[in-house]
Length: 259
Image (cartoon, rainbow, N blue to C red; front, side):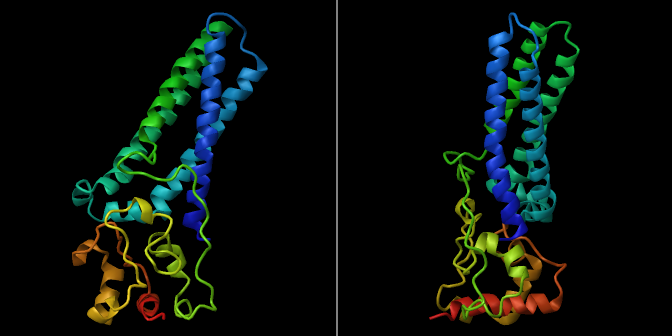
């Protein structure tokens, strides 16, 4: 499992902890907003919600700044990317609203601690946490939304085993930079593929490699899809060593030659 897929899985599951704890904080505040002391239980619940929220933010920032091929593609040409719904959502909209929701939750924490009595503190926590949750809910890529992701991610089986004839030429960089979209067997069915339009190429399609030269494949890997009239969702990889680029080119061609 690549670092990208691991963080993506954690991000998917921690989301439910955040939403569950946030809902519990809202219910607790609703119950005690007119009367009642701020109890040790309410304190633990509020702290747990904020801890889960901060953990989710860290995971999201690691994806956004380091691991995600989608945000990498967005920053190649932000102007052009704004016209692509998938890139715009993850490059600007999702991260902006989620950071806003975290800030709202923490402002609510600060404001609530200044309350003069327990009932006032509960009312403040209720209002600020509910606002934070509403912001989150509007920017989660739910399965029914135009830009969608599964409710719960399942881990893939990993990179194709070395016993596979198609996997033998693949360098480790295939797992870290390609398999998330193109799939561990090169069939265009990676964990990100379901939400991408156009869908990633299936390298297992017979004959596609014969229509392009080795240099073209290497150029697409180095320059990214947009530079060659292909999907703008495929980011460039100018930092790869020539040896890795050559190995990747042989790797993706080998998938199409599999019986």
